[in-house]
Length: 180
Image (tube, rainbow, N blue to C red; front, top):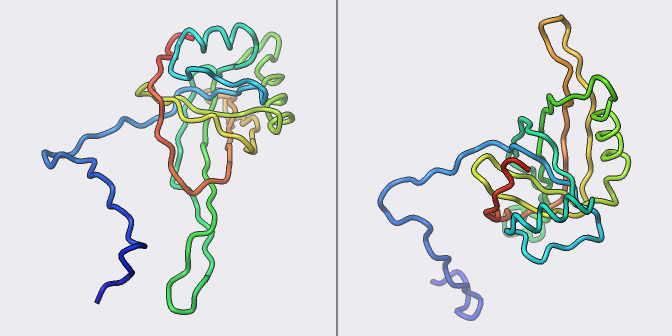
């Protein structure tokens, strides 16, 4: 007996493997982007547009950092007595450590304080080591603080988490932001 009526049966997605082995994506987040809330890209894959947006102070990129996007968490709720709980919401995060500093003028302190204070007025995205940009993401929260390690061979760095609500995964856009 069929599980559903034919009208409710969706088409299956096209397989993403060719059956010839596994193709890997490289990990690592190398930069974060913060975008003014009123700025819209016309071609987010255009390096020229990124350079112009940065020059006009509509976009700012962090320096190189250590970042990752771990598995998100999901909110579930029982919506029928006859089945398992359904996913009704989700939360995604990017965690990072930023070792860049400006010991003379504390520009790094000013930068991260401004980002944390004004997060609701920005959009956010992240750039991976393999050249893909994910975003822009609206409505996110930033939690960032300075860490001072316990000895003189350690470092002072920024440790942060950026969180937003989503259940679906985005596909990144190939763009070359290296050297910007």
